[in-house]
Length: 162
Image (cartoon, rainbow, N blue to C red; front, side, top):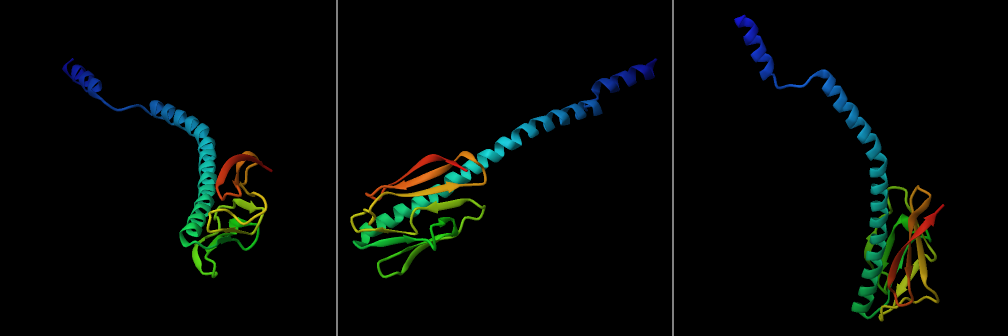
């Protein structure tokens, strides 16, 4: 009888969990992860688009401020209208002030022109507003349009990519 009581006391002090409890916990965790991962991917892609749009806007604002500071034209130029291959900011003499590398993840950034020139007033030397379309591998309302007004100020709006 004494051994029986000692065994019962040992079982009551046992502080683990069973294999069944472990399996149920893992099953619930797997279900939650399978629901969260696709949403997390969308968040990452949206943040990447926002970052890339901000990189272009930062370069545009820097070019504009340099043109005003230097009282001279400053150009922002890409090899073609495909700006996702990178761009260069150069002064009136063609000297590189700053450059930006190509986008690494396959996003496309297509502009209406291959070069923008900011005048010493901060305005762009163009006849009309300049637009860029930034898209990734998704379709639907996931892209961004960056529009530069004649006054040189960029603005971002959401757009539909195909």
